[in-house]
Image 1 (tube, rainbow, N blue to C red):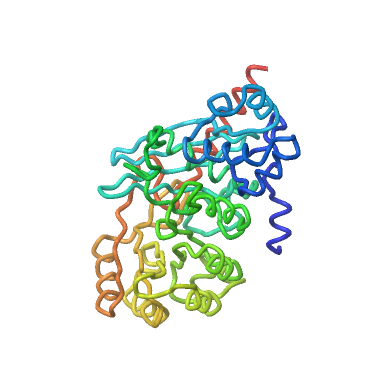
Image 2: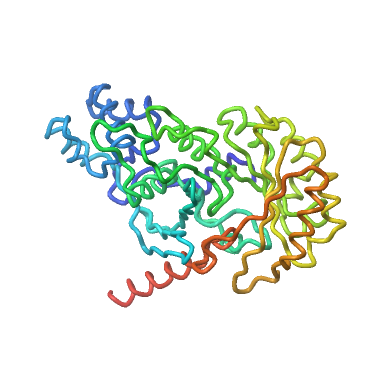
Length: 384
């Protein structure tokens, strides 16, 4: 299926359940155009933009410098809502996972990972996933639809709500933030929803939007080669590649997308990624699967494969989930694999699993959303 066909078939809703047009996710000129249709002057659109992205308001009634009758009009026609929180779980390590209910009832998961010097939000781009990577729990959930730009941004806005990071009057927007980094590593393949992801990230990076540096935003892809080039040219955020195998035969077996975009094409796109340098490296993600991709020979093959690409390799201990056919490589095996990479000059940190106890770790997002949605349906049926 072409990207255009995919975007059409799995498109996000254009309005919310009440028929209102979401203002979140619109570029400044789009917001002006939409509001002009209702007779709202351009300068008012700029004020609304400021309230949404600088002050974090969730209700038009809080926009104090707008006339009361205009606030009523905006509330009738447009939406700046947040998703409902269907569930919140907190890990023993401080990680928080939110199950968010969108306006049409669909559910997505978003994870906040606090660290000593930064806080990272793992954001979803689709409900379910179009890919079927064998080791990933999300991949066992069929793709339902793409998220709209507003639904991607709503996850970030919600996290800032919870962390109480909206500045008070007179404060700079970036003062005292706990949420410092965004990773597009949640449910879904971001590059199969490129238009909406791109719109959302541009607002994240806009100095008049959420004002986040592109160096603090990472997009992870399983290897949608044409959009890697487009992403680099238009967004130039940090790039992470879900690699997980050093050869085509194994990668195709555990990641079917490799049959469409084999390693030679994928790595050629990586070598040509804009601004690639030793200071701005690509991250290759490599989940460690016992007796599958963790041998010494496979480590040496990986070194050869990545030769000449400024990069680091994140080694990720497999995070188990019910029904998976894989096991986690032993700590000794992971460390030996890492030493082979490091001795060849590659930076190969081992990622510390976060949020495993609430199924919030890498590759685990899905089960809670599916179970909760089923429970909600049963509850609705019982109440009828």
